[in-house]
Length: 104
Image (cartoon, rainbow, N blue to C red; front, side, top):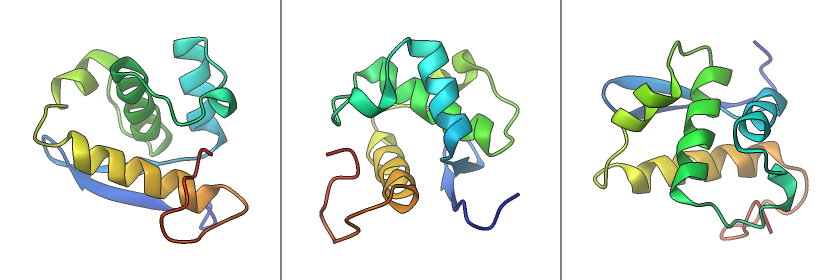
């Protein structure tokens, strides 16, 4: 695993590892049919589910999309968003200032 690509650990149903890399983008686009780079930060609930699943798969987690849906609820959606946003921000070139949107 490349040390250049950061991972984050998050507690969902159990401690899980998330990773955002090009594989993540590929999985997201294949599953949704959407261009990740044209999303402009506008993610539906389904998009968030697929992005979480893709981050889990990219980190080597053995999990299906349905299993991923089962571990998301209103109590952890905020921490999921924060973790994924942090990973994307770390992965993207450009402005790394606090508060800057990684998808803008």
